[in-house]
Image (cartoon, rainbow, N blue to C red; front, side, top):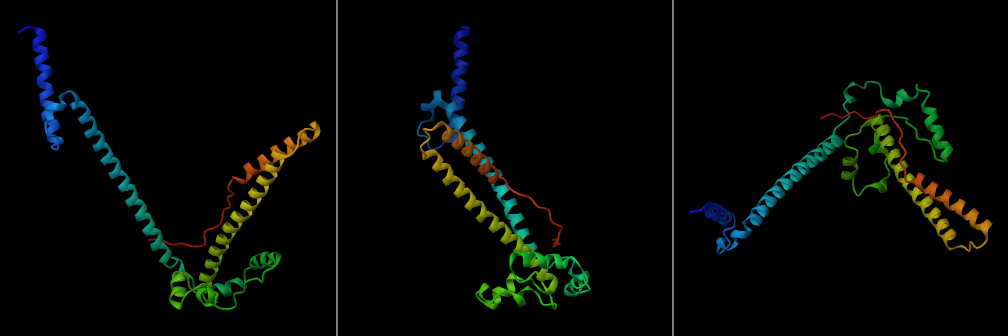
Length: 230
């Protein structure tokens, strides 16, 4: 047998072995030898499926980690502040000696709101509005991790931040909408006069700059007011 025929025989044997392996991976094929010439394609598909399965397992691992972190956050939210056992002087008494409290009250005065008062050691559940909850159980559950006057101050801080975040979004949406209207008015205006066209281009550039600024986020730093550990 010549060298050429020997090489062809070796290639055919390799293909037959591959076809047999393909049949083991794909038993649904009626005749695996019909796909001898395409067996590499089937192995490519099998390898692709294997990689895809590994990616799905990796995604599942990330999802499990995210779920774990979410459960930890929920657990922390239900826990009392870790400093509570060491707080001996009631917070409402401490406020009477802290001159900075008048600055907080001034902020409410400037907004036109009645400043908050801490006259006793009642907690947030005792002063929250009646219409905020469906029943008493929901009220208790909401403030489960905050107690006494210090808990009321903590909740006040949380809610003021929530209110500020929502209000910032409302203001931003309003300004974005108004700027977009002015921009559309400029685009539809008659700018045949060179001077008016020049002014319109300046206004359009300024509006675009303002819109870009409104896309940015603002960061403010606060001192820690809650300490919770698992």
